Amino acid sequence: MMRSARVAPSQGRSPNVNASKGEWRARCDACGESYVLADWLALAMVTHVAPSWLDSHLTGWKPDELVEVRRCSKCGTSLARLRRVEQAP
Image 1 (cartoon, rainbow, N blue to C red):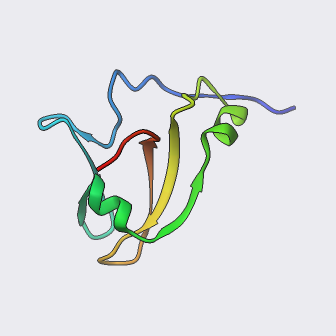
Image 2 (cartoon, rainbow, N blue to C red):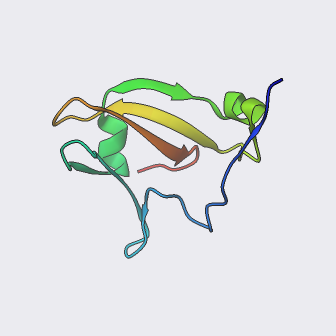
């Protein structure tokens, strides 16, 4: 029997948003390198999980959110981050 996962409420902001400045940021947990959205988009894409796939497997997934996996330019670690589709640099 397959069970649906429930997405925790984001309390109005993405975990990738710097609350003090209101800007999207990603940080590599392995080396500490930090990326603003424009730098994130320039990183090599490893893969992404489309909103349609996420919605079919998770209850309450927003249609404008996807998960991207990109490679850290400093250490090469794969970084997975939630990003809203309409976000642009």
